[in-house]
Image (tube, rainbow, N blue to C red; front, top):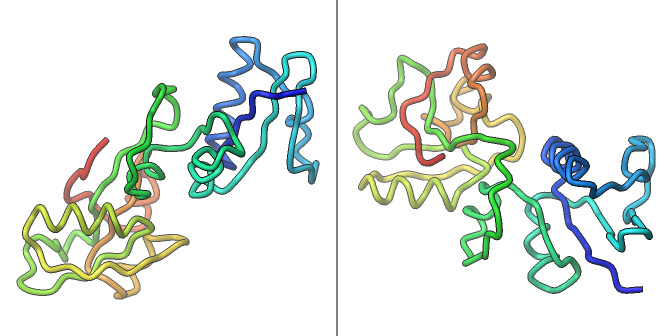
Length: 179
């Protein structure tokens, strides 16, 4: 049987996507078992197949035909730098790209070389290039907010949903890169 295959980004986005799908009758009971180590989940009745992948891998699975549809955040699409076709904005996982840092060290006031910690070096480089600033992007995959606190960099480019983590760690938003 040929399935319509969905690649979903692991984590909160997958949970929100599955809840949205359920509202329109697309279900997969197998995926509700959070203890399962299965990699591929199917709904035989509807002819749907689902799998969870790291966000950065979802576009690759779609591009090479292993998945028919991928659900991933716009951050992943923008960072990938390719010309993806976005079928629909599901209206979930609303965040924005921000430039942030310690209040007393506004990186836009700094003269010369600026260090930026980020999970998104391509987006950060493009943003600062458009601002005419000399920046070095330091790739960080974990808690990006730590970097300016520990003095690794002058500021960060990251996605922000509520801003709570920034506030609780003494960081402020200096600018919005994009929604």
